[in-house]
Length: 119
Image (cartoon, rainbow, N blue to C red; front, side):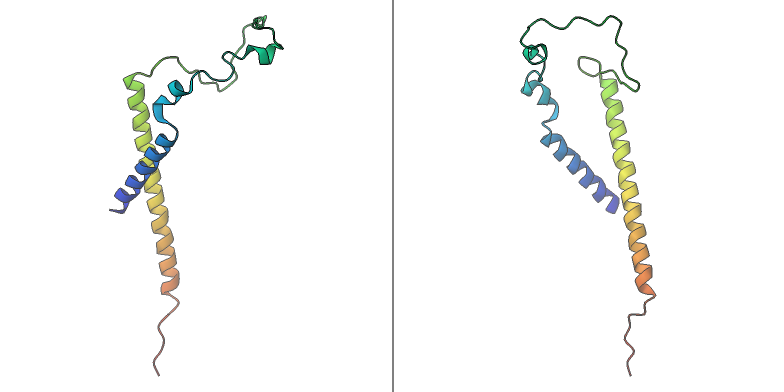
């Protein structure tokens, strides 16, 4: 029952964060980003774009390319399964750590002999 409660709370927090970040409609509702049509700021008023570099620009190490367009159902399903697994592992870790803490505290206070002797 406790694990189910942790899972429900985790899902609720996930939904709340998703809603607060405007969900999938965030990109369409905000319009173009800063710098799409902001040529005057980087070119001192000259509307022509900068010349291309002499050699091809290589992406930095660890760069993950972002594909344009919508994701396929396969990649979405993989991402959802990864999220479910991450939430489940996190819930199990949280439940075990809380159980261990309560067990430690209960054993610590069980040996104190809190009973008052009657004379």
